[in-house]
Image (cartoon, rainbow, N blue to C red):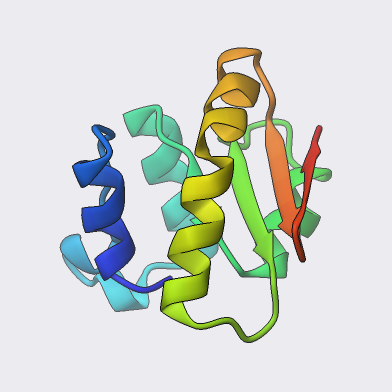
Length: 109
């Protein structure tokens, strides 16, 4: 995910941290990221299908926002997230564990 996405979430009043902010951030494994999110009670925002696939295999997964979007400009990504943010937040407050955005559709599990 683009690091500037962190600033967008912060500007909108939410906590956000990019993996690059951690020691060895670019070398963190999916398991490391999962553990960090669980420990920090965070969600994972990703385009990586491994998090989506592992969500169904692992009982100890933090909430995941899976962006199944293919190639998309940062501008379009930010716009899409801003347009869906209230629905995403409502879903997470309602204990959703997996949210997927595919094209312009929002799926909540």
